[in-house]
Length: 307
Image (tube, rainbow, N blue to C red; front, side, top):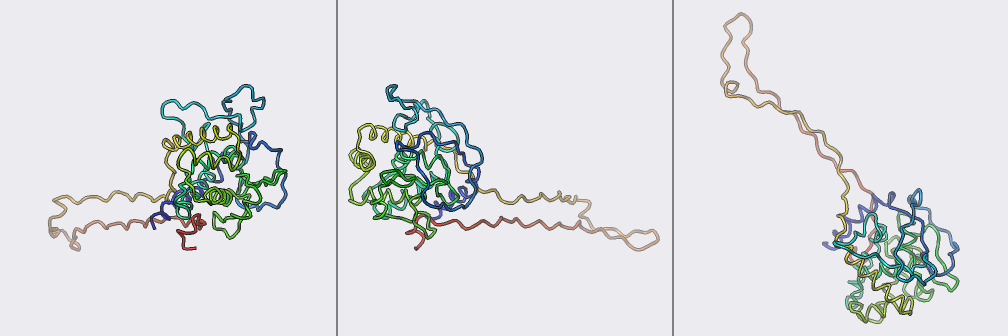
């Protein structure tokens, strides 16, 4: 199926490159106090080794008094072609988290087509709520290395209210577990929650309605809109996702090409001894190209996978 094939290709790259994804230390991912782990986190996959130096962000207001607060940060000016969202830079989104936003958008296009919730609006909310899952500090399935639970009960990388998670709990990566601390599950649940009333999220009023469900302040809405627009533009100049390289195949030695004289019938040798006949050089057998066996990738859009 075309949708499924289009999704699996980048996921293969995600599985191959998640171990080396950038992992700068979180820079004020939430306005609430630092979360305390309250549940066991599955130790699956490889966590980034050394946190990098956090990116410095431009503050829209010098009077905010807290430059580490995500609400006081805005994307940089977008000169020329802007900044790519994959790789390094002020608009960078960890690859696995980016795939979670895109997978949620694709699933919601099937479940709630009238809503039209775009991935970059989810990404803007994820940026302000948890700095993209603590800047990508997750295992290979997308579960946070340290669970996020605020004093008022908001959960996970999207900081969903407990009641919203209980009603819209989702298995976004189809691993058989619904976990609010998993970025795939949490992002799909956030989309299902904001699209539950059937209203559109495509226009300015829809953006305001979605943002208000997370934070009703005008400053939050303005920041969500700014980040959403920046991510949308940044995606247009992002580099292509690298494909998994095949196994190297050795190049066979050159085969000599027979000349016209060599193609002529051989003449018997009049000297003593057995008659010598000219024979064509043997054709070497070319090695077969082999492709390495890849591990199974979990389906991220259950409807497209027949589940």
